[in-house]
Image (cartoon, rainbow, N blue to C red; front, side, top):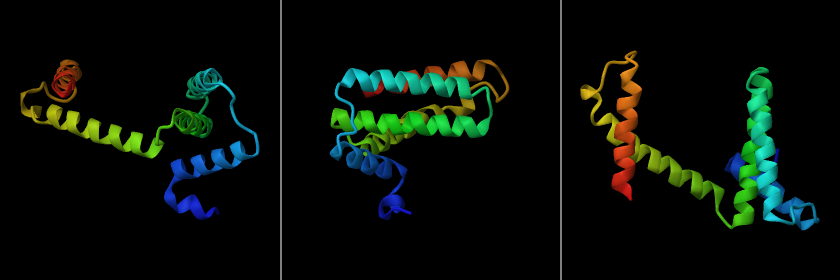
Length: 126
């Protein structure tokens, strides 16, 4: 097990990518990374119909490629995900603040009402 494994899978992916890049095994053009990410997403979509183990593997490939793309864009993938988690939590708290006013669980209108609250929270943040 790598010494970085305790830091999490995102950090380990980044370490592996840096190691490969130092030896010249890296993408040359940003367009190549976008194409590879599209390819990995397509493989994930296909795998989702073929069972959980293959889906997990393909999702891992998408995440690894997202970290690689972040590296090339100069973005800290861990910080980006933490920011998105915080943003989701804020917006979802706005949705949850009105739970009593929403249609009951199971009512098909509930998701639409929740989505409307979500969009309201999103507009407030801009």
